[in-house]
Image 1 (spheres, rainbow, N blue to C red):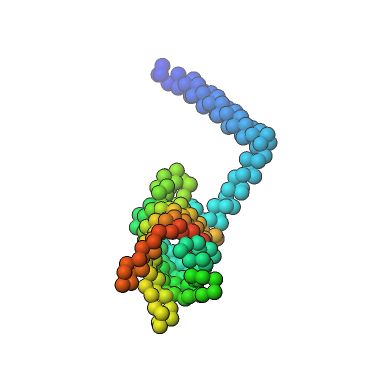
Image 2: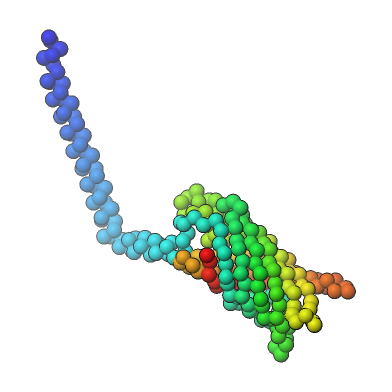
Length: 221
């Protein structure tokens, strides 16, 4: 019976403590909102920056997972062993892990050994790419597992010059550093450069080093 007398008093004490805690939490939440609002008022560029960052991420699709891409691209710039090279190619890139991918391409090119002589060729490219900072960016929430990133690449480019009457086979092993980014849902760009070797297996083996710079723009499906 004595315990029953204290139950209403204990209930009132508990209710009072809960109400006081609710007031404290409400005050803290209000202060936090006021602080954030004040920061934005004092630094309006922060809101602008976040909006622009979100728009950029939507364009490059950095936070959208994409483990493979069918590519149809156009060679915009190519500075290598020849004075000029342009062409079109179709390829497929597949992620093996967050940081490694395989790439296979086939294309048709126009290039010149001299300004007054132009050749056509068929080419096949096999490459492996190492997206060196992709796992870290995925861990930090900056990137999803996709093909938009910076990479190192070991690439083997095989040329078969045309027409058949002057057919010549040329091999180009290359060590490249590149940047590939999505441009919306269906486009992408790929820029890379590095060191390459021209190997012509004729009667006498011909080998020559050279600097490689490439820029491609295309459709990625």
